[in-house]
Length: 324
Length: 230
Image (cartoon, rainbow over all chains, first blue to last red; front, side):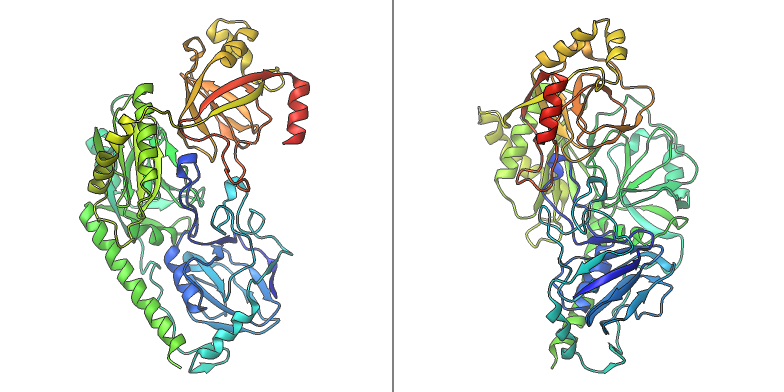
């Protein structure tokens, strides 16, 4: 009743929607870098939205399903023959073998009924800096065995119609993958935007930034022309959020991602619109982006649009499970 | 008082841009008053040095939509109550610290900068009454105010790649305790055997915003015994 890891890939961790309520003691919410892809993968196997899945990163793993398992993989397009964006009945002994990500950077492997790992502080997400949550608080290694929490959930597959070769003939839309680069990322001006000089302000919006290799779940370092230091005194350390773009003295901006620090002492030039964070998370190192200024109203509208698209996809999936 | 957006799902209500312990004390009471309202679309209330950050769930149907207006309304509704209450938020916490040279990696440097004897640094640090002003940088990592001004030395010129877990450090007018072995630039003057953050505990963090903290000097033997128990 489990999945065995033959090869872990670059970084494979258990992630759900994260843990809220602990930022005042310095613990970030964490969770899936691309929560939209996670939501789709969960829906495709009939899971509730807050179930945990495997987040795979840039170089995929090799896994073997030791029992019949209902699986769905959503998010980045990896080099694999395993079907994407649809429910798959993986028979005992089936392997999931993925090479490099060809489009996007992260995908989510959800299994019906979820994984039998204990929640920590209300979430099954792996928090690597604190070494807790998920599977023993760490990334998966060769030889790990992840038990399934509800092996009988594989039977959900029998509710589906138009089944062929262990899968269906429809698929869920990839909602967060870049069609082309550079991707456009909307930002709201940060608290310290106006203390940067005009050249730095302009460079921030004019530059096509690249995600630097030393980027991770905590933050994306952006390579481009270094930004000038802001005028005025050193700032008092203050709060940050998912999507804050900080500029340390090196002038190299850092976009804070899921496992970010909850406070920081660097000026925040901008904050990424929440609707665009999942799309940014799909950029691999070397991926290109540029920033466009947006208002709070526009950010709220982008968020509503993204949510409408997700909800419509989720309704479509739910309908396939219910129409018998 | 000003309010700035932290993206479209959070806002920071700022009272001052330089450190003021009295303002921070109001911030602590305000944060607690907002938390106690248990507003369903408020996910996190984070007291910071000079203000309070509010993180929202924008997908909650009751969320009013504009983070700035939502934050201001919450603060305005809670401020009066926060100012009226006399009781200080937070608890009294005592942290045992061993100031022996083996743990106090920067004690000699601090003593030189502060023009004090080694024992003078330790005794002044242990004599202080501190308050948790803000938590951040890492889970369980508290920025505490109340350091003896005589000990207010700048951060190290180059941060250490790894500061051992439990290291008690100082810089400027604050003291911190590193909850994990992580990189850091503060001057390490001792170590506590206590575990600052353990996700498996019901109260995962040993320190919480607003806590009043005292340090108690312990010997190396006591440290070893307590570390074994922890």
